[in-house]
Image (cartoon, rainbow, N blue to C red):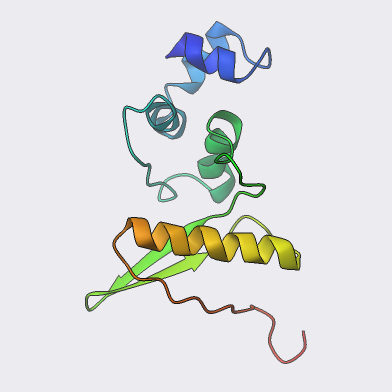
Length: 128
């Protein structure tokens, strides 16, 4: 795992630094996903958003054919699932990025067995 992590970072990390990073669950879990030993990773309860996302950006990268990374929160209440996307990554996405984020989120919902219905919301209120 250490050797793979060093290779992924392409000279930005040596073996000793990789071993140290792998003592942190966010890096260890990300490497399990990257190596195909896990299908996904839940995070954010004990690490900041930046510390949760950084290992994935450094080690897993974007999916082939994707140009933007976004986040998705799955809210569950009374048997209903609501997929809220990009509440933490892209602060000011342009229209093309919004389209890609919406398509990524719809794909994620389908992977969880949920028929996607997409609505676009903004956190701007009353012209702010």
